[in-house]
Every structure is written in structure tokens, then in C-alpha cells.
Image (cartoon, rainbow, N blue to C red):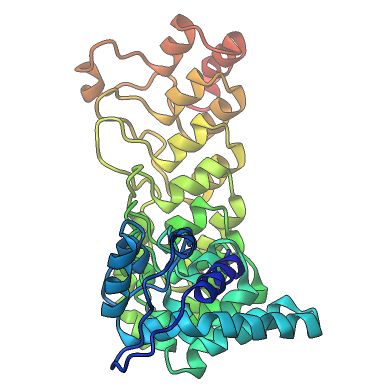
Amino acid sequence: DRPQIYLLIDNLLQKVVMASEPSEQSFFRAPTDDALDTFNSIDTWPSLQNGSDPQDELAVQSAGQVLQTFRKMPPNVQKEFAEYPGIVKLGLEKYAESGDASSTVEWIVSQIPSMLFRPDRTGYIPIEAALESGNGAAARMMLNEAERVGSLDRLLGYRNARYGHTLMMLAVHLNSRDFADIFERLLNFDPTSVHRCYDLDGCNVFHRCTKSKSCTSLQIIFGLLINLSSVFLKDKIRHLKDALEMTDSKKYTPLHYIALDGNVEMLESLQRFLRHKNININFDACFKDSRLLTPLMLGVQNGQFEVCKWLLENGSVDVHFKQQSTCLTALHFAVRAGNPELISLLMEHGADPEYIDSECDGVEGYRTPLAVAETEHIPNKQACIRCLRRAEEFF
């Protein structure tokens, strides 16, 4: 952790004597082997701006090479090495006096604001780690400190080069209205990021919310989008629709994650947003390949009755939407899952137990939902067959 790193640096500096020769840059005398061991044990160094990590250069070098490498470092980096121990000592004194770790860390950051942009070995800068762990208080402190030193826009617009995510994508883990101000700052800085930015897994902010089951975060974002100027949103409606229908690397839309989790509250929040902005989305949107799954199909496969009911009643789904290569419909999946309740629900909304069309005629081995129930080994076989044979009650 950070305090341990500072103590290691302090230990190193105590073992190394500053040279007395005049120079434009301060530099160390060649350190002893003991000092080198300390030097190379440090997990995280201040990174060089637009350059490599000093540790990467120093950890594999001899004592003489370390000296030469250090002398080539920019003066500001050398200065940081020299200042860290003193700042940490003062921070520890403040902590000893106050017993308040949070204010101590805040003070240290105020003394070295450049630390706000120092990535760790995972490639995260501090605010990213705070947001992903749900530590909204720490994230807010960092935003306030960035504003104090004139770096707020740089921090709000930060995007991780290794993973492709924005801060808003990580902020969904806060999932609390106590930190709505953080969402507001991020969205006001760049409202287009919610539909324009995707991480390396093909996820946008809506994927992130639904995938992580962060319903409150989704509601906050929808609320902020509703309150944005209508003039601003006028040209963005189509992009918001596209973002809600976009599939990620798993071939899931945000609706797929909602269906997978069975989260009706998210569906209701989505519906309120769509109605308010007069957006019509395709509730059957899916990756168009031979084994496609609509959100309804995925909900059926996972036994999410309430979500399936909501989609059938509110989502304008096509109950006979089928996989292109197999001709399987949601009712086929309900039969193979052995779920009489879902079979009945789908049939109440028009699903045909004898479903077949011209495309299905050309699929080798195709069987109607009723034929599947009668010929395959499925759970609750007799109950499923009874449900399917009651078709005349619905047709």
C-alpha cells in the first residue's frame, strides 16, 4: 500500500548520500547493495509523464547503471523522490495528533496533487480504484482536490488506456444516491460519453449498470439525462437508442443483463426514461448470428418469470422470434427447461405449441415445442405436455 511505499523510499533515502558536486540536477552517489535491495523492492514508483515507469528501468540495473538512470530523470521526478519521505512523516504526525486517517490522506494528496494521475500496477489511477471499490467519499475528495489545483477537466475526462473505460463506467459501482453529485459532475462534463464510449469488452455505461446490478446508478444516470437540455438531447436520441440496443463482446445488450438477473425494477426505470424522452427501442435486439438469443429467450432459459412477464406485457416482444439456424423460439426454451409456468405464460401471449413455418421446414431435425416435450427427456415432462396440450384454450 502507499504508506509502505513511502517508508521504503524513506529507508532508501537514509541509505543514500546526496552528492555535493555542483550540477543542474540533483543526483545520488552510487548506492550500496543494501540500498539497492530497498530500491528494487518498491512496488510503485511515480511514473514519468509520457514515459516508462522508473522502476522498470531501475529494477534490472547494476548500482552504477541505477545512478546514471536516476541522473537522466527529469528534475521534477527526482524532486518527488526526495520530498515523499518528509511529506509522509508530516502526514503520520498529523494522523498521530488527529487519529483521522481520511483527513491525513487528503492532506498528503493536497501536498502532492500529481499523485491523482499516478497509475498503479493494474493501470488504475487512484480515483479509478476508489470508484470501482464503491468509495465515493474518496472519489469526491479527489475531484475536489483536482478542482483546487486546476486539473478537474483533466480528471473528469480521464479514460483508461489499458481497459478503455471512462470514470462514469466505474462510478456505477457507487450505486448510491449519496454520490449523485459525482455522477452529475461526470455527466455534465461529457454527456455524450454514455453512448459514445465503450470499453475493451464492448460495454457502454448502460451495459456496466445492468451487468453489475447497479439499479440505483442506472436510475441516477437516467434522471440526469432527463434533466439535460432538450436542445442538447435532440440530436442524441438516436445514439441513446443505439447504445441501449448495442451488443457487447458476450453478444448481450443491456436488456440481456437485466433479463439474466431478473431485475424488473431496472426494466421499469428504463421504461420511464424511454417514455419521457419518447424513445422506442427494440426489446428483441440481439446479435444477429445463427445462435442468437433475445432478452426474452435468455430470461426463459434462466427461469426469470417476472422479467419475462414484464417483457411480454410491456416490451413489445415477438413471442415467435426464432433462432435462424435452429428455428427455436422462447417456447422451445421453456419446454427444454421443463418450466410449466413459463410455458403457460408464453402461450397466454400467443406462443404456438405447434409452431412451424416455411423456414423451419428446411431445418433438419426441427420439432415443434409440443413434439420436443413428447420426444425429449425434460424436467416436469408430463406437466409441460399438459400445458402445451391446452392450446385450444388460447387459440
